[in-house]
Length: 253
Image (cartoon, rainbow, N blue to C red):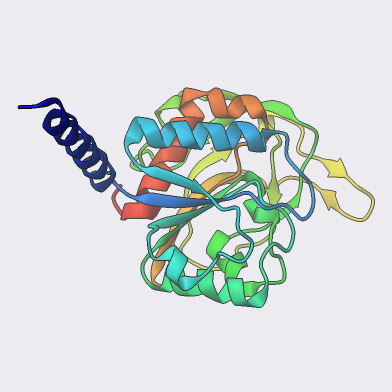
């Protein structure tokens, strides 16, 4: 075999391997980080952690960067959309309808932390998330409680795990059928807070911080954890997050 033929064969082998590797990915998710309000310091750490998670678990994470690119055609390639610490009114009416059709087509949604502080005026979205952010006290350390040990990825929160977080207090359920999997023990921190225009007294004996549910033909997973940049280097949180992403993208628990 002459040198030219060898190089040509080598080139096609590399191209073939590249396409094979791409074809073997489990799934692809779209990562949305748009903020129209508070910008979390953990956003950068979260993006990097999710990209690395994709490498470790053989799925693609695509960062949404084109404001005009949120279309039905573009979303065909994805199995789930992730809202990472989004805030405020981030989608126009056309984009809202695109996400609605995406979920109605059997796809998934993952909301992280302030995804519940997003799109309050979009009733369909508030039902997708399940509950919306109301208020939070100062960042504190508290004990977590596993509510549903059958849902994967919660092992790191067993035995009253101490966790430092901006503990969200939520408003009422926006829909039925929420499956709560993780909570915070309000007896281990001070949930009371007064912002003047709004106050918080806590949520009582069961204060959920993560849940999932089937909604409008698709699936939605939400976790309130993820305020601090250091959360995204904690194996316990990353396992919890991947379990939610995997379920939202595949329907498998």
